[in-house]
Image 1 (cartoon, helix red, strand yellow):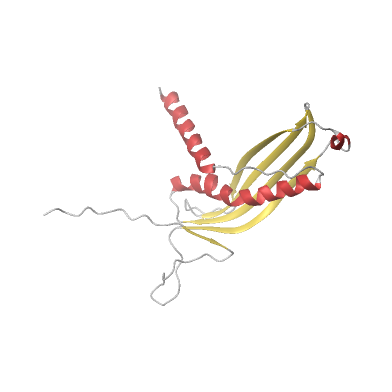
Image 2 (tube, helix red, strand yellow):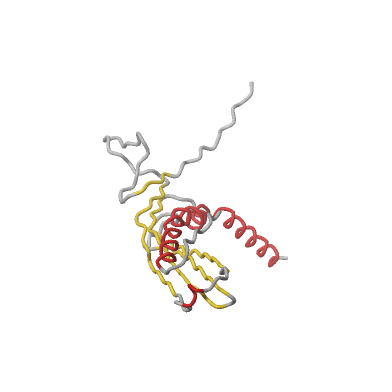
Length: 189
Protein backbone atom coordinates (compact mmCIF):
# COMPACT_ATOMS: atom_id res chain seq x y z
CA UNK A 1 0.00 0.00 0.00
CA UNK A 2 1.49 3.34 -1.05
CA UNK A 3 1.87 6.03 1.57
CA UNK A 4 0.56 9.47 0.76
CA UNK A 5 3.24 12.14 0.89
CA UNK A 6 2.56 15.10 3.13
CA UNK A 7 2.30 18.28 1.09
CA UNK A 8 3.58 21.59 2.33
CA UNK A 9 0.75 24.03 2.52
CA UNK A 10 1.62 27.50 1.29
CA UNK A 11 0.10 30.27 3.34
CA UNK A 12 -1.28 32.93 1.02
CA UNK A 13 -0.41 36.57 1.58
CA UNK A 14 -3.41 38.63 2.58
CA UNK A 15 -3.36 41.96 0.71
CA UNK A 16 -5.82 44.73 1.38
CA UNK A 17 -6.23 48.47 1.19
CA UNK A 18 -7.20 50.88 3.90
CA UNK A 19 -6.21 51.40 7.48
CA UNK A 20 -7.57 48.23 9.05
CA UNK A 21 -5.87 44.88 8.47
CA UNK A 22 -8.01 42.46 6.51
CA UNK A 23 -8.79 39.01 7.85
CA UNK A 24 -9.43 36.02 5.62
CA UNK A 25 -13.05 35.07 5.20
CA UNK A 26 -14.22 32.84 8.02
CA UNK A 27 -11.15 33.34 10.23
CA UNK A 28 -12.43 33.68 13.78
CA UNK A 29 -11.21 33.03 17.27
CA UNK A 30 -13.15 30.91 19.74
CA UNK A 31 -15.12 33.98 20.88
CA UNK A 32 -16.37 34.69 17.34
CA UNK A 33 -14.06 37.69 16.77
CA UNK A 34 -11.99 37.87 13.61
CA UNK A 35 -8.32 37.12 14.05
CA UNK A 36 -5.50 38.67 12.06
CA UNK A 37 -3.95 36.37 9.43
CA UNK A 38 -0.47 35.00 10.03
CA UNK A 39 0.92 36.59 6.85
CA UNK A 40 -0.26 40.05 5.96
CA UNK A 41 0.72 42.76 3.48
CA UNK A 42 -1.37 45.93 3.80
CA UNK A 43 -1.18 49.26 2.02
CA UNK A 44 -1.61 52.00 4.61
CA UNK A 45 -0.98 55.19 2.61
CA UNK A 46 0.14 56.40 -0.82
CA UNK A 47 1.54 59.93 -1.12
CA UNK A 48 3.73 62.15 -3.27
CA UNK A 49 6.83 62.72 -1.15
CA UNK A 50 8.68 65.10 -3.47
CA UNK A 51 8.13 66.60 -6.91
CA UNK A 52 10.45 68.69 -9.04
CA UNK A 53 10.17 70.07 -12.57
CA UNK A 54 12.68 72.27 -14.38
CA UNK A 55 12.62 73.57 -17.93
CA UNK A 56 15.84 75.58 -18.31
CA UNK A 57 15.38 76.19 -22.07
CA UNK A 58 11.91 77.74 -21.74
CA UNK A 59 10.42 79.47 -23.64
CA UNK A 60 12.81 78.86 -26.56
CA UNK A 61 12.38 75.09 -26.33
CA UNK A 62 8.78 75.42 -27.54
CA UNK A 63 9.87 76.90 -30.88
CA UNK A 64 12.31 74.09 -31.72
CA UNK A 65 11.28 71.37 -34.13
CA UNK A 66 13.78 68.63 -33.11
CA UNK A 67 12.53 65.60 -31.28
CA UNK A 68 13.93 65.31 -27.77
CA UNK A 69 15.79 62.32 -26.39
CA UNK A 70 14.02 61.11 -23.26
CA UNK A 71 15.74 59.11 -20.53
CA UNK A 72 13.74 57.56 -17.67
CA UNK A 73 15.51 56.26 -14.57
CA UNK A 74 13.88 54.56 -11.56
CA UNK A 75 15.19 53.75 -8.14
CA UNK A 76 13.61 52.11 -5.10
CA UNK A 77 14.35 53.43 -1.62
CA UNK A 78 12.93 52.01 1.57
CA UNK A 79 13.15 52.32 5.30
CA UNK A 80 11.59 50.63 8.28
CA UNK A 81 9.39 53.02 10.23
CA UNK A 82 9.05 51.11 13.50
CA UNK A 83 11.56 49.30 15.63
CA UNK A 84 9.78 45.96 15.95
CA UNK A 85 12.20 43.23 16.91
CA UNK A 86 10.32 40.57 14.97
CA UNK A 87 11.74 39.95 11.50
CA UNK A 88 9.18 40.16 8.69
CA UNK A 89 6.85 42.37 10.71
CA UNK A 90 6.45 46.14 10.81
CA UNK A 91 5.73 49.33 8.91
CA UNK A 92 7.85 50.23 5.90
CA UNK A 93 8.08 53.34 3.76
CA UNK A 94 8.90 52.49 0.15
CA UNK A 95 9.73 55.32 -2.27
CA UNK A 96 9.76 54.90 -6.04
CA UNK A 97 12.02 57.65 -7.41
CA UNK A 98 11.38 58.44 -11.07
CA UNK A 99 13.72 60.83 -12.90
CA UNK A 100 12.92 61.87 -16.46
CA UNK A 101 15.49 63.86 -18.44
CA UNK A 102 14.58 65.24 -21.86
CA UNK A 103 17.40 66.64 -24.01
CA UNK A 104 17.52 68.41 -27.36
CA UNK A 105 20.97 68.43 -28.95
CA UNK A 106 22.57 67.78 -25.57
CA UNK A 107 20.76 70.60 -23.77
CA UNK A 108 18.17 69.80 -21.12
CA UNK A 109 14.65 70.57 -22.35
CA UNK A 110 13.14 69.46 -19.05
CA UNK A 111 14.00 67.52 -15.93
CA UNK A 112 11.23 65.95 -13.88
CA UNK A 113 11.72 64.01 -10.65
CA UNK A 114 8.96 62.41 -8.62
CA UNK A 115 9.23 60.52 -5.37
CA UNK A 116 6.05 58.47 -5.08
CA UNK A 117 5.89 56.89 -1.65
CA UNK A 118 3.78 54.42 0.24
CA UNK A 119 3.54 53.09 3.75
CA UNK A 120 3.07 49.34 3.93
CA UNK A 121 2.41 47.12 6.92
CA UNK A 122 3.87 43.64 6.85
CA UNK A 123 3.21 40.89 9.39
CA UNK A 124 4.54 37.37 9.74
CA UNK A 125 6.60 37.22 6.55
CA UNK A 126 9.66 35.04 6.19
CA UNK A 127 12.87 37.06 5.95
CA UNK A 128 13.56 35.89 2.38
CA UNK A 129 10.10 37.10 1.29
CA UNK A 130 10.75 40.64 2.54
CA UNK A 131 13.10 41.52 -0.33
CA UNK A 132 10.49 40.47 -2.84
CA UNK A 133 7.75 42.44 -1.08
CA UNK A 134 9.85 45.63 -0.79
CA UNK A 135 11.43 45.47 -4.27
CA UNK A 136 8.57 43.98 -6.32
CA UNK A 137 5.14 44.17 -4.71
CA UNK A 138 5.44 47.70 -3.29
CA UNK A 139 6.84 49.34 -6.48
CA UNK A 140 4.14 47.59 -8.54
CA UNK A 141 1.56 49.36 -6.38
CA UNK A 142 3.34 52.74 -6.54
CA UNK A 143 4.17 52.82 -10.28
CA UNK A 144 0.69 53.81 -11.58
CA UNK A 145 0.62 56.76 -9.17
CA UNK A 146 4.14 57.84 -10.21
CA UNK A 147 3.30 57.49 -13.92
CA UNK A 148 0.28 59.75 -13.52
CA UNK A 149 2.22 62.35 -11.48
CA UNK A 150 5.04 62.50 -14.05
CA UNK A 151 2.66 62.69 -17.03
CA UNK A 152 0.57 65.45 -15.48
CA UNK A 153 3.61 67.49 -14.42
CA UNK A 154 5.26 67.24 -17.84
CA UNK A 155 2.02 68.38 -19.51
CA UNK A 156 1.67 71.30 -17.10
CA UNK A 157 5.22 72.24 -18.07
CA UNK A 158 4.01 72.73 -21.66
CA UNK A 159 5.33 69.48 -23.12
CA UNK A 160 3.43 66.59 -24.76
CA UNK A 161 2.07 63.84 -22.55
CA UNK A 162 4.79 61.45 -21.41
CA UNK A 163 3.76 57.85 -20.91
CA UNK A 164 6.15 55.73 -18.87
CA UNK A 165 6.15 52.11 -19.99
CA UNK A 166 5.25 49.36 -17.53
CA UNK A 167 8.17 47.96 -15.55
CA UNK A 168 8.71 44.30 -14.71
CA UNK A 169 10.01 44.74 -11.16
CA UNK A 170 10.02 40.97 -10.64
CA UNK A 171 12.46 40.43 -13.53
CA UNK A 172 14.69 43.24 -12.21
CA UNK A 173 14.60 41.71 -8.73
CA UNK A 174 15.53 38.26 -10.02
CA UNK A 175 18.32 39.76 -12.15
CA UNK A 176 19.69 41.62 -9.11
CA UNK A 177 19.61 38.45 -7.00
CA UNK A 178 21.41 36.48 -9.73
CA UNK A 179 24.09 39.18 -9.97
CA UNK A 180 24.52 39.23 -6.18
CA UNK A 181 24.83 35.44 -6.07
CA UNK A 182 27.37 35.51 -8.93
CA UNK A 183 29.40 38.21 -7.15
CA UNK A 184 29.23 36.21 -3.92
CA UNK A 185 30.46 33.02 -5.58
CA UNK A 186 33.29 34.93 -7.29
CA UNK A 187 34.37 36.41 -3.95
CA UNK A 188 34.57 32.92 -2.41
CA UNK A 189 36.67 31.48 -5.24
